[in-house]
Image 1 (cartoon, one colour):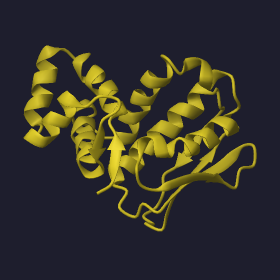
Image 2 (image 1 turned 90 degrees about the vertical axis):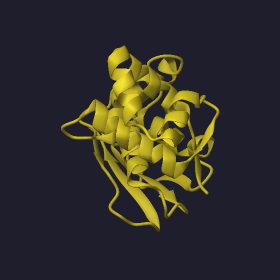
Image 3 (image 1 turned 90 degrees about the horizontal axis):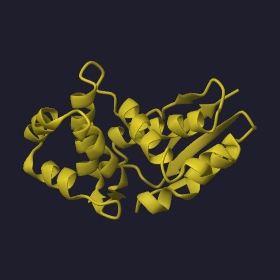
Length: 179
């Protein structure tokens, strides 16, 4: 069973709690027991089953963004939270190309399945590719889209565009461009 680190769930808890006590209780009431446990007990170092973390992201996105239910938008906020604290200095200094390539190299820190790489880099575009993970859930593909968008914005990329991958279990490819 594929697993993913729960690092972003810590930020998700903060985001939900910022909505107020009643909102947090409403959110907890939406969660099945297994998801409630993951939401409340996950630390940055906890490895969760991919399917459960993806399901938690979907429930949280529909709660936080009831009109769109956008996991990508939610994850963009979560990534900004992460990168505007401890990692702030690391995303402001390097080039967009360097950061995007680094994102691929840290994949293994967060997922125990799949291999990420950057390919076809031109200086204003690249492909972020994940192979050997045919069961990568849609919610985690959307989370990756949001994460890449936040990275581009924080590195001051101009006019960033990320095309999420079409369904292709052989290789999930995000085409990323910026000016």
